[in-house]
Image 1 (cartoon, helix red, strand yellow):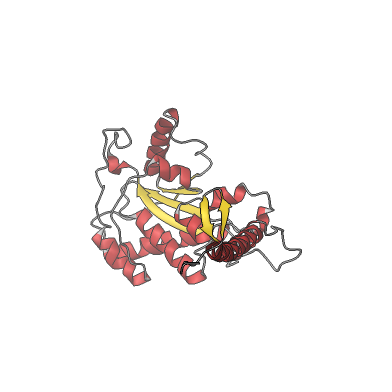
Image 2 (image 1 turned 30 degrees about the vertical axis):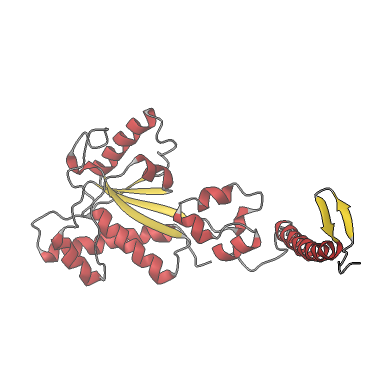
Length: 267
């Protein structure tokens, strides 16, 4: 009328909107609603996935298979933070199917001789037998002869030192390449370790003295069952290469016996 085009309007709470606009909005909202519904259904299915122990399996699960089966973080992620063992113990499922990670800490007085050779030998054993998911190892020192090394203001006399050059040269003949700087043991290392191998009575006594002090401070607990006295390397600075070879050979025999006692398998 009079050249004016009239549009039909409907009344809504938000105001008067042309009908062709409302129909377009309804179609768009319908598509968004369907997408949201589908997304929520997928999320529900993922979260509600049944977690059941397999009826029968051939041997223990690998860490990766265990993580996938129980819808949990991968074992490799847990290993990085040293939590796999404690996490597995808290599971409702039978942890006999979950392989345990054994953490070993090798300790000698200086962390430049016995403990370094032991650590390198265990790492070689892990690599050659594919046991990275079953066994980890590190080495530490016990003060290097100082009596205040574990106190708040104390320090280790060999902290930061490299392995003995004479031993490094001879150990290479056994395909053992010693590396890494010396570090003193601390309360966190004691708590995280399952086995603490002390090479030599002096290192053993120093570790017990430090652990007793840390226990009174509430930093460690239940540590005595972890600590094991092991034969130290029968070598001293200035000995000949032949003497060093004999000492390392005998030392490795003791280390092999210990590793055999763990009864580890690739599974």
